[in-house]
Amino acid sequence: MFQEGQLYAPVVTDADGEVVVHLAEDHPGFADADYRERRNTIASLAMDWQPGQPCPIAPYTDEEHDVWRVVSAELAVQHERLACRAARDGRATLDLPLDRIPQLDEVTAALAPLSGFEYRPAAGLVPLREFYGSLADRAFWSTQYIRHHSVPLYTPEPDVVHEVIGHAITLAEPSYAALYVEAGRAARRVESVEALEFVSKVFWFSLEFGVVHEPDGPKAYGAGLLSSYGEIQEFPEADLRPLDLARMGTQTYDITHYQPVLFAARSWGEVHDVVGGFFADADDATVERLLHAAAAQV
Image (cartoon, rainbow, N blue to C red; front, side, top):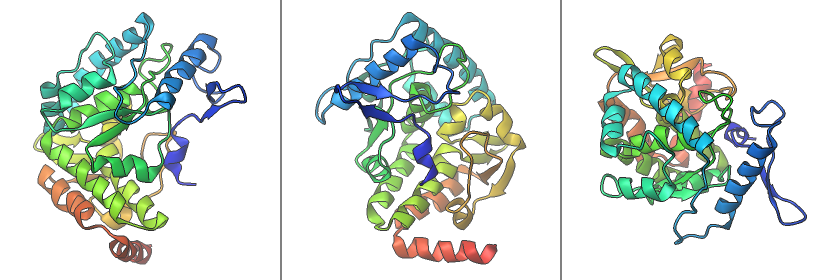
């Protein structure tokens, strides 16, 4: 199974019609009955949502807003040091609230005049082709739950911090948004599962965990780095390799650890030329050529 499927806790509907989120035993909220119930409630909101409806209002608690406040403040400091210029510009323009978790429709309203992107509620994992393909329509599927309060600077799965502080600040910047749209078009253009997984891995090592060299050193531009208090401080010590699409589309990774191998562009322009160019032209034949190139490099 493609590894991205392991990122999210499984969400099921039980025999009584109740939505249940299955947290792993090592999840920080596993033994917290109140947290588990809130996860079920928030997941059920997304499960009941229909296209064309407003995003459901997640009834966040004061404790959950406190988690957002802590993470927002800490990430803001790290972004000033280690986020790329485009991400800092996007964050400043979007101007997210620092004292509370924004509702998804608030994020959409803020993004609309900047890039035209809208947020849609997701209970958990969205199938690859639907998630990436929706980007072509400037739609982003987002979870609404937030990490457990006992470890505000850590989450084992993408939460609303990742989806909004990580992705929304980049979607607010037009040159970033253009990359997302091209990635969505590529996901719709390719036909084979193998080609789709290749596209998603290039996305992973760019718009999730991409690095770009700027005059004062390597900077994070991927949302996975931008939303991780720990990893954004550690990524400069990773094995930073030049952009190589064949490698990016076949590189294995362990989602439970900081990424030891990352791909760093020489400039923001190179991100657009190489990554954006791939998304703009990718089809099954392109992916097949790159897979052969990767096999030849072994």
